[in-house]
Image 1 (spheres, rainbow, N blue to C red):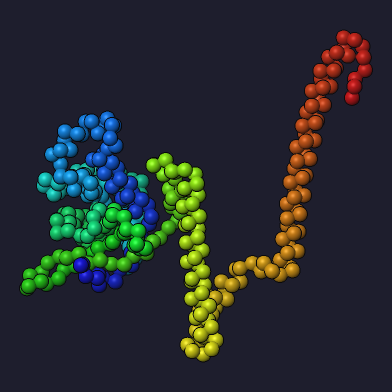
Image 2 (tube, helix red, strand yellow):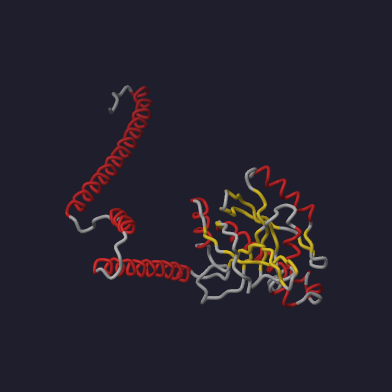
Amino acid sequence: MAPSSSSGLTFKLHPLVIVNISDHYTRVKTQLNPPPGSVCSTENKASSNNNNNGEAMNPRVYGCVIGVQRGRTVEIFNSFELLFDPSTETLDRSFLEKKQELYKKVFPDFYILGWYSTGSDAEESDMLIHKALMDINESPVYVLLNPAINHAQKDLPVTIYESELHVIDGIPQLIFAHTSYTIETVEAERISVDHVAHLKPSDGGSAATQLAAQLTGIHSAIKMLNSRIRVLHQYLAAMQKGDIPCENSLLRQVSSLLRRLPAMESERFQDNFLMEYNDKLLVTYLAMITNCTSTMNEMVDKFNTAYDRNTRRGGRTAFM
């Protein structure tokens, strides 16, 4: 197991990077294992017999991660794919430089912070790729996504490694050291992730299945919120009894949080709620009446125009 990093850097990872890596892995795996009966399956049938079965079932993908570093904080915003030659275990350098130039035009403030791959753990061969990127970034980061599904795991299957120089048996060597990170999102990313989470399953799942999955997620979120509120209540009760020392900063945060909650049971809230509700209904009714009046005026104008043509022929007076 890799040791923990001692650099003291703070890493912030955006969900777009995780989505990009997962999409990259899914596309490569689908191309190596096409559905039976498809065109790709027929074309790749002969070549698939020569490939390693384990490598085809769990292929490794490679790419670069880009972002910014402000002081001791490293924020990873985006990523792009790289071409990797398994025979020489090297990256296509010309392709990397071309992609870097294109991204520099669109995101001039972003720099290559490191690279990514997929797998359960960092391998010895990964250090060769890591060293090859040191001329671009002297201390690149390594983002590793584990594509294996583990329902018992609650944390994200993403690990971030840094390289550190350690003396092993009297010889200085670079090794991978895993570091902690936090997920940082913006409004656009939250909308995108929510949209991806509610996409219809590719296996043709019914609407009831999707509804059940959504309700299960809501139930889990409410359950977690309830458990955190219970922990906070127990902490405040122990503070009130004097079992633990009073912490004014925490009390201020709790007081600020409680002020955000609406007083649902108060008479004043009910009066204000009913007043706003009636105002909204009144505005809606006025809009409907205005729409109906406008439609009636248009109909009367059309009727007068048509009736006026007839009066010119028969000498009758206008209806309105």
